[in-house]
View 1 (cartoon, helix red, strand yellow):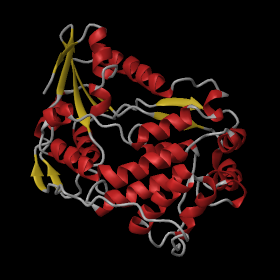
View 2 (tube, one colour):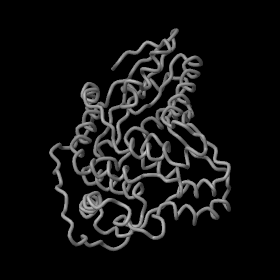
View 3 (tube, rainbow, N blue to C red):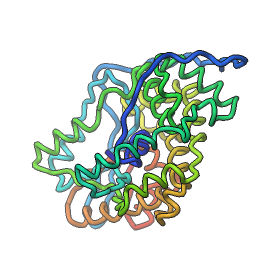
View 4 (cartoon, rainbow, N blue to C red):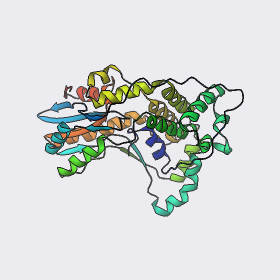
Length: 339
């Protein structure tokens, strides 16, 4: 799974291995007031839905078809993906979504040796709890959301803000009927298999030569992941209706609605926290977002030159932003036709 697919995956892959725990309920701290909760207004669509059309990117008679993806999507939809199946059936290659993979060749026993260190990565230093590491106003807001969506998970209070944020977001999405059922990948996988195509990974693989030292640097790298939790709390407090509207727009094929409402979710804040950490800076990885885009472009251009038709998946917001993937392709001489 790539980092761009979800920032939750970004956290987990960054640590090589991860797991979750649950424990008893946590009481509201004395002297704190619960933050207001914005109730849902939008209704999640269900049943058979068309999904969005495809972007057509062409050059010298070769075509790259791009499916813009949105996450999370409604759990109870049946995607009528006739166009995608037809395009994949006549394509020479299927490109997976871009991302980052931190790769460490440590083998089975190496993983066992790393396990205790990785477990520590998920925890705050010196046994601290979130009430100790977050500013009081943020902790008050976090605790209100935690009590609503994760009331029985006391162990989460000992986790780093980034990991607590991932669990809160997943629980909130589940509560409104989003994100629990894979929608796009099963269709693409089955269509590729029927066409005899092995999908092509496009993740930028970064080799970790000394994984144990990397884990230590990740823990001690001065990463400010409180901003990641803060943005997630913002999302859960205020943006759930927006996520429902965007999920519905994707399901119903309303690309214009997606274009009119670009959305930068908590993933951007969490990725920025990682990018600015000592773990990344000390290893010379630079701008992860730019590196991922450049890596994808090199693979995509080679695929377009090789095949008459190619199919690819990209997050729709990365497609449409001013310096995004479509802009980069257009700057390289490709013609772009919107769905």
